[in-house]
Length: 114
Length: 116
Image 1: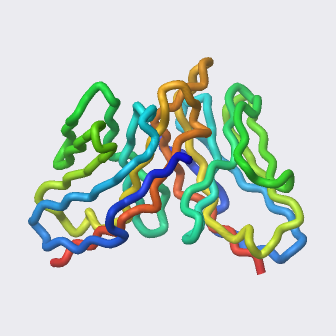
Image 2 (image 1 turned 90 degrees about the vertical axis):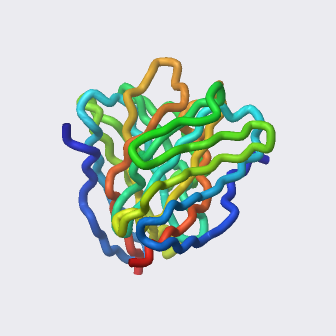
């Protein structure tokens, strides 16, 4: 069945360093991927998305890389700040599906060490 | 533009009671989805409403229901509460399309429900 997973449940990074959060997916038909950030006591916040016709997309301090060959997605955060501490989720969905098929990973807890 | 607003923020109920949660989507968004978030199960899809109609439903029992009003605001109801219903209930809105294709979701802060 479909699954979206993360390689590491926790990640600690020194403030100012770059961080990389990884995500693997199993559905080769997935064509839309989203990264969310969830801080304690808040709902998931949209960070960045990418479609399968791209392999890289950049935002402010964040970059998402998509490797369709190995079904792998990563989120890179540059120059991490204390406010980046949160749980990060990847989510994926196939081209012909509605929101009910948006599948979320279990999340990686990122801790920024001052 | 205001974000997705959920009320109340916290709720404490006892087994057997029922509860109603409210969600106001981002202005202009016509689709509202509800998710249950627990530490063990992660984010699980409950249902989606579009133009006052339930368009999709997840694998939850009939005790979980919802509705959407003409202004796109949505409510979800859980009847005969069980201990296992304790969770963070998240509402998410999206622009919505008649095709019902997957879209970028914007989440509210959720309602933390505790069932005692």
